[in-house]
Image 1 (spheres, helix red, strand yellow):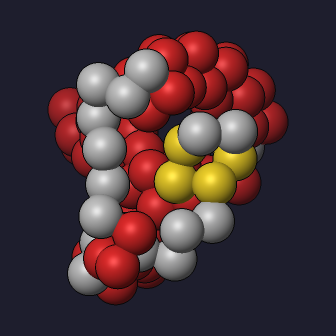
Image 2 (cartoon, one colour):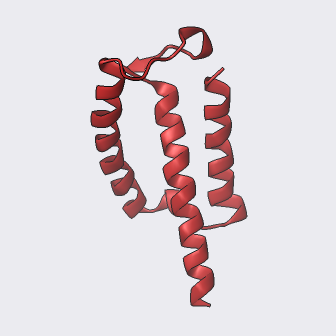
Length: 98
């Protein structure tokens, strides 16, 4: 099932950002603006890939809730990838400045 790993990745990402690394990047205005731009690009690219369909999904393995042609799980997974990368980068950057 694709939904469970996607949700777990989001929970781990939020815990990483807020509790372990304590970067709290998701609370910043810059991050929210950035994630908005990333989502726009994601909608275009992933929308094309799922609408054509270059990429297909087994409906039995997901919630089958879609925004246009994009499964909601893709949004969750994409958020996790982007947020965890930025959180780790910010953590390392702060450690190097000390």
